[in-house]
Length: 114
Length: 115
Image (cartoon, rainbow over all chains, first blue to last red; front, side, top):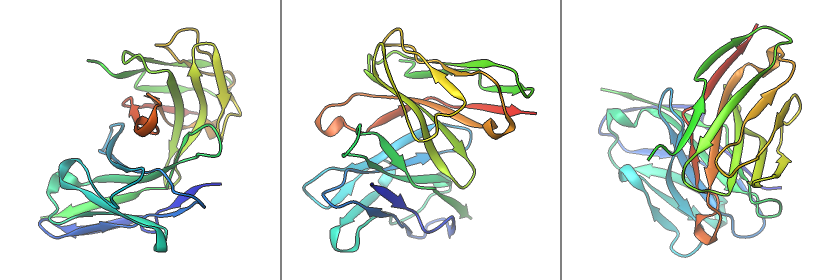
């Protein structure tokens, strides 16, 4: 079955620094991959998604992610982090063998220090 | 545009009590979901529905029930609350077609504590 792994539970970066959040997937064919963000006390919001085509995907709020099949990865990046980016980030994959439901990783909490 | 609305936002239950978490969406989405979120565990799918009158179990359905009588509403019922059901519950909906597949719209969550 498909799954995603987020190896980093918590990451701290300085405001203005670059950011990379890791996501590894397990799936035999081309996966449908997503990144969601959850601000404190809120529901999840879609940042970006990958279905096919260009492996570098642009999202909202200045985020991008790159699909690398050779590494089974879909890492999220941002060149310059803002204090408002502090949140929890979830990678997710569609279960294409079943009911096309979404399965989430365990999340990475981002802290931004001034 | 309200999107996905969940009520209540907070609730404390005693062991053995019952309650219903309400969820409604105004986007005419066919697909609706209930997830629970526990610290360090991500989101786990409890139940989902592909349309009015059709529901199915997700990863962690035990202790819960759902119904889907209309496109808009997808309530989650806890019959005999247990401490293990202390969690934050999220309702979500989606439109499934091509590249819309998997894009979920979430409510703000319902924090439930069972004591």
